Every structure is written in structure tokens, then in C-alpha cells.
Amino acid sequence: MVRIFDPITLRGGTIKNRARVSPMCQYMSTGKDGIPDDWHLTRLCGFANGGFGLILTESTAISPEGRITPQDTGIWNNRQADAWARITADVQERGSAIGIQLGHAGRKGSSWSPLTGNHGSVPVHTDGWPTLGPSPVPFSDTYATPAQMTTADLDKVVEDFRRAAERSVAAGFDVVEIHAAHGYLLHQFLPPLSNRRGDEYGGTLENRAALLLRTVGAVRAAVPHTPLFVRVSATDWAEGGLTSEDVGRVAAKLGCLGVDLVDVSTGGNTPSPTIPTGPGYQVPAAVAGHEASGIPVSAVGMITEPEQAEAVLTDHGITAVMLGRAALDNPHWPLLAARRLADGRLTGDFVQRTVLSRRLTGAATSHCACLSRGASAPRQATFTRQGAASGVCSALPRTRVAGAFPQCAGRSPRTGCTWASVQCGVRGGPGWSWVVPCSESLGMRVPPGRAQPGTRGSAGTRRRRH
Ligand SMILES: Cc1cc2nc3c(=O)[nH]c(=O)nc-3n(C[C@H](O)[C@H](O)[C@H](O)COP(=O)(O)O)c2cc1C
Image 1 (cartoon, rainbow, N blue to C red):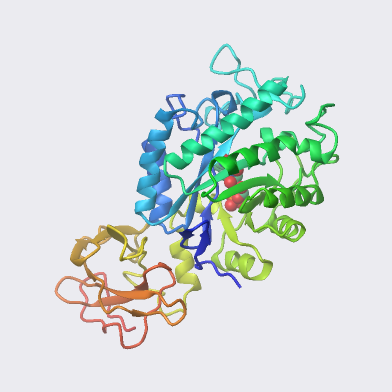
Image 2: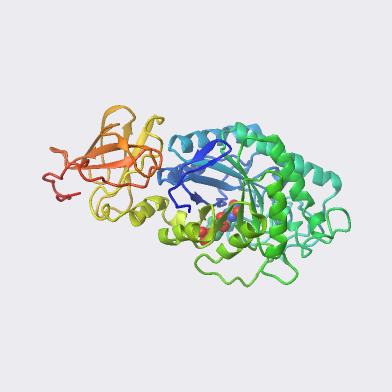
């Protein structure tokens, strides 16, 4: 049985827990050159500070014409890759893994960013471009009709994905995810709704899946040591659209090609489907995909509560949960989960939780997230890895946070990992201490006898007994 703070090892790399940030477009590459900037850096690092095991970037274009909007990020050139390298290093320094979602928008490309308030296609005579698709079928009335892709166009797409994957790994990404969901190019080929071709890329499901399978094969061969995920839409929620049986068959083929996980979502290939949304509404599709193909899957879609997320893993055989809007609402969601899923002795007080975002023995710095009562957001103090360290918790300036790593090291009976004790105290006394596991990072417990009893606190704190 898998739990949310269980690590997972994929192709030799370990991701510290099963809480992941789902890809989310930002439309914030304001130079319209596909280069991620400080917006992307701070946003993605924020999730890492919050303790997510794996953070996926937004859909990142493999070519200029593959962008959804002019403001999308890309990885079709080395300037973009260099900008991503800064971000991957910073996220990893905080102990999270980072994956890139590679996408081509096909007939949904050249769209207005939702931030502009416009809908549909950006005209070619402004910032837009002519779009490509499996067939000359527009996404909706407000979208331009794409040109039917030629064989040369298809070859270019496969090659662009391959090269983008190579650049991604060179830029330090831990995971590559191919976006074949939400009505973008690789998805557009799958259902007859958007694919009316009469050649070897149309007709049977096998033919319609050919572009996806070719792409996956090329990427797998190019980056054999990197975990490879594919995001699929398990249903189009539409008559004549994809069904979960179709997607189960495709997922099985993806498994044969060496895909490590299928990230199961739904929809996106029709403009206004009726979707029965609700908490965990896409989990059954993920379960069906897993059962049909045997491949590990992640689930996404209105998974918001820690207990709910844990149950998705423990009760449904799902490998990881992806959080979208819940992660936007609370980039420190894993801290919430740690508290809610812990044994109850950690609830309540002044400095409540710590995230050691890397193994203490391997990290240059470790981050102590402090949540004071009444503060709206966790603040951080940074401890150096070795020896005494101290800082001031910015949530309560009168509060001194001190720690020494490693201290009182012990063994977790459950995981066998080393524990370290962190002392945080109010000025003038030790006051507070707790222990954190080095590698699990969030499954905090305070073993009896190891913690020090609370001493007199200053304003804003109170005596605490472990
Ligand atoms: C602002 C925003 C941008 C999104 N961009 C992407 C994207 O780039 N790629 C993708 O596969 N899904 C994208 N999604 C979908 C999310 O990854 C996720 O599947 C969806 O929001 C459902 O999960 P949630 O209920 O946890 O938000 C986006 C969602 C939001 C809210």
C-alpha cells in the first residue's frame, strides 16, 4: 500500500513523496520568446519550498508553432534551455524533483492568452501563426481552421519532441512528460472527432495512435535514463470521442515503449463538453487506465484534501496524485497534509512544522518552515547543513529559531532513515524541539523522550509539551 509521503524510485532517481504539482500554463513569457523568467522561477520554487515531491512545468512548446499562446514557455532553443537550467537547479536545491511537460498545441495553437480577456485564435497579422492539425477541422467557431499535416510536418513534430526532450535533460529536468491530452496535437490524432485522415495516421485506433507512439519511441530512445510520463485524456466526454477502453489500449502500448507512468486526465478536445465534475472525478478513469494497461498511473482533478489524496493512493492502486488548483491555493499543501495526516501530536501551536527539503546529509541548506498562529502564510528560516545555525522567523520577528544538524540522530523504525532533531526556541530558552526524518521529509513524529520539554515562552508563544 502506497501512502502520500512514501518516496518512489524511478530509473535510479528518488522522488521524496507522491504529491505532485500538475502542469499549469502561466502565459507569462512576456517577451513572447518562450523564455521562462523570474515569474516561473519563483512560482516553481514556491512549490518546492512547500514540500511537493515532483513539480511539473506548464505545457512547454517544442517549437514556436507548437505554442498554445504567444506567451507560452518553450524549449526549442538553447537560450530557453539555459533559462530552464537556472530553475531546475533552484527547485532541486529545495529538495523537489522537477519535470517538464512538452507540448504541441496543433489546432489549438495561436490562441489568445486568457489573461488578455480574448477568446479563440490570435490573428496571423498580429502575434499569431497558421496552425496545423490532423485534419482541417477547427476546434470551435472562434478558432482558425488548421492545415492538414503532411508527412514532413509529422516527421518534424517527432523530431522536435525528441530534441526538446534532449534539451530538457541537459537543462537538468528529472522527468519528461509528453502532453497528449486536453485536445492538443497528439490528442487530436487519437479520436475520429478531430482526425479524419485516410492515410496511415487515420482510421483505426492503431493508426490514430501512430503519431503519439512514434513520438514516445523517439523520446524514449533519446533520453533512456530519464523517467518518461505521458499525459492522456481518458475520455472526450463526447459522442464519437475517445473512450477509456481506447485509452487503456493505447496506455498498454505506451508501457511497452518504456513509459514509466501515464498521467490520466480527461477532456479538452471539444469546446463545451458536459463533464460531471466533483471531488476526484477523474480517479475512476485513472483506475480504469491502470487496470487495462498495468502501467502505473497518476490521478488528477479536484483532489484537494490530504485525506482524500491519501485514499486515492491507498484504496485505488494509484501511484501519485497531481494537484492543480489546490496547489495554486496553497503552495505549501504538503505541509497541510503532513499536519493532517500525522499522528495528532503536531497540531496546534507556534512553530508547527518543518520541511527539511533535502536529505540533511546531502543538502547545502535546509529550510525550516514556521507557521505562527495568526500568520497568513508560512515563513522560512534557513539552516546550514552542518553545525549550529540560527535565524529569525520572519513570521514573528521576536522569535529566534535555532537549530543544529544533525542532532540527536536516531533511526525511524518504519523507514530506517535517520532522524534529526531540530531545536527552535524563543529568545532566551530552548523551548521547542521536534524531529524530522531526513529523507521522508514530512512524516514528522516526536518520539517520547527525544524532544525537550517546552520552557517559558515569550509573547506570542505558549508552553508546549510534547
Ligand atoms: C491555470 C491552469 C493552467 C493549466 N495548464 C495546464 C497545462 O499546461 N498542461 C496540462 O496538462 N494541464 C493544465 N491544466 C490542467 C491541470 O493540470 C489539472 O489537470 C486540472 O486543473 C485539474 O486538476 P485540479 O482540479 O487539481 O485543478 C491547467 C489548469 C489550470 C487551472
